[in-house]
Amino acid sequence: MNDIKENSGFKSYIGESELESITLDDAQRTKFLDGETIVHEESKVLLYTPLSDRQKYITGVLTVTTFKLSFASAEEPEPSNCYQQNFLLGVNDICLSSIDVIYQIGDRSKKKLLPGQNVSGKIKDILIICKNMKSLEFSFKNSSRDSGKKIVNALLHHAYPKRHSLLFAYDYKEPYVNNTLSKEARFFHKKADWEKELKRTKCQNWRISQVNYNYQISPLLIETIIIPQSVTDNIIKEAVEKFRNRFCPIWVWGTQKGAALVRMADLLPAITDRTDENKLLEHIRKSHPDKKPPHIIDLSTPAPKDIQTSYMKLRDLCTPDNTRLFKNQDFKFYGMLDSTKWLLYVSVCLSKAVEAAEHLSVQESTVVLQEGNGQDLNCVVSSLAQLILDPYFRTKFGFQSLIQKEWIALGHPFANRLGHILCKEIEPSPIFLLFLDCVWQLLQQYPKAFQISETYLTTMWDSAHISIFDTFLFNSHHDRFMAENGSLILRSVWDWREQFVDKDIGLFCNPLYDDSFREPLTPHTGLSGLEIWLQCYFRWLPDLEIRNGGRPQVDLFSRYLVSEILQTQQGPTDLNGRYNRNKEQYIELIHKVNSFFPFSHNSGLVSSDATNNVLLTGDTLDSQSILNFND
Image 1 (cartoon, one colour):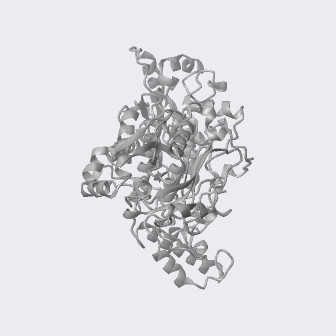
Image 2 (cartoon, one colour):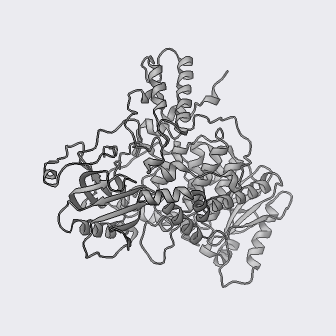
Image 3 (tube, helix red, strand yellow):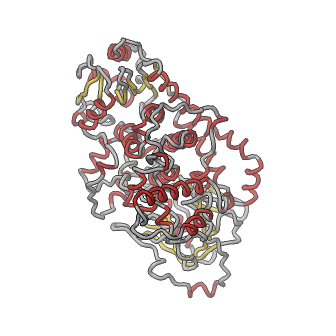
C-alpha cells in the first residue's frame, strides 16, 4: 500500500551535482500492487507546484507502471493523518485510467500529444490533466537523456489501452473476498433484488419476466426485467428488434397508486412505423389502475457529444497552468463558466427530473423516459426523479443500490463514456459526473435530506477511474459476466475499506442527515439556484483554497457535536474508549481545517491524534446525526 505525502510547495535549491545524493527510504518509495509491473522509471524529475510558474518544485523519481503514474520524493514532509489517504494511490500518484490529456510544454507553447502515437523528439516538460481535474506538471531538464520521451511514450501506450482486457483489473491478483457487501448495496443482478424492489414500492399490474435469461434477446439488457402484466414474453421478443440497443420499455420504479417510472430507447432510425411502440405504450396505459395514458419525456438533448464538449470547456477552466491564465480566467470567471454550458445541462437534467416527479406524485401518472440508446440521460433523470420522491434512495445504502440499479444493471456504457478504451468509434462523455453534480446541487438545497456527504460524491468520481473495481469498468452486465468467467477478479467499489481507513469513510456520511425527513424534494432548477461544485473541480488549485475556513469547518463542527451528544448519552468515555479531555484541542483542530478538506494538501497545520475522535467512523454516522437524537 502507498504512503500518502503532502505537496509542501517547497522550492528545491539543490544543485544538479547534489541530486545524486538524494535517496528515498522505504516509507517514501512507491509501493506496488500484486500484479503491477514497472514500465519505465526516471530519477531527478521535477514536479512543479500548481500555479507557481515553475518557481516551486520538488525533485524525485517518476515511475510509470501498468496501473499508475507515481512520483516519489525525499523532499516531502511526513503526511498528515487528517487528510484522505488512499491505500491504492499516494498524493502524487494517478491511476492511468484517470489520465485525460497529456501536453508537451515548450517555452511559449503547449502541444497536445495523441494517444497511441510514438514521440521521437526531445521532451523537456509535460503537463498531465486528469478526468477529475487534477493536473501534474513535470520537468526532465535534470534527468538523463531522452528521459522525457521514454516516460511520455510509456504513458501514451499504457494509459490508453485498445482492448478492455489490457486494463489493470485483469492483472490485479490480490485475493478478494467480502461477505459484507450485502450491507452496502443491493446489486440488482439477480431476480430476487427486482422482486424486492417491486414489493417495496407496492406498484401494481407489473410482473417479473426472464425473457432475457442467458441474454437470449439482448446482451445489453439484464436477465430480469419488469414489464406490464398484460405483455407476454413473445411480444417482448418481437418488440426488442425495433428498439436501439434492444432497449424496450422497462419498469424501474413505481408508487402505491400505480404510477410507474419506465425507461426505453428510441426506435431504430430505419423504422418509421411506430405501431409496435404504440402497442407497448398501450399496455403501459392499461397497467395503470385508472388507465391513465403515460406522460412521455423526451431526453434526446443534450446529447453525449454536447456533454463532452461542455466538460472539456469546464476542464480547461478548472486547470489553468500558469498565473497569467489563472488571473485572466478569474477576471471573467462567471462568463466563461456560462459559456461551458455545464450548469445549463445540470439545470436541464434537474428540470426533467422534477417534471417526472410531479407527474408521478402529483398527477399520479406513469412516466416514460425515452432517449436514443436508453442508457445515458435516462440513467440521470430516472435516478434524480427517484431521489426527489423516495427517501430510501437518499440513504447511503439506498444511493449505492440506486446506482447499481439505474447505471450498472441497466447498462450505462461506463467503459465507453469514461474513456477506459481507446477507439475511434467510442464516444466518451462524463454523463456520470453530470449526475453526481446534480445530486450535489440537491444536497446543497436539502442538507438534511441525504445521508451521503459532498466528500462521498467527490470520492465516487475519483473512484470511477480506478481500474481495479468492476463497478464502473464495463458497458453492460453481460460484459462483466463474460470477464468474470475469464481471469478477472470482481471487486466492488462499495467496499470502501479497500481504499480507505474508517476515519476517511466516516466523512462519507452527512452529520446533518435527518431520517425523519421523508417529504418529496422541490429543488430550484434554474441557473440562479445552482452553484459550481468547488470541492470536486477546484481542490487541486491551492491558490483558491480558503485557509482555516469554508464549509468543512461546519461539517467537522457538526461531527464534533455528534460525538459530544453521544458521549453525554453513553458516559464519560468517548467513542474510542478513551477519556475525552481535550475539547479545546478539538475546536482548535476544526478551526485550522481548510476549505478543500479532506482533499487539501496545502498546509500541514492540521495534524493531531484528536482527529480520530472528531471524525466518527462511517458505521457510527450511519445511524447517528445531530438531527436524529432523542430529546
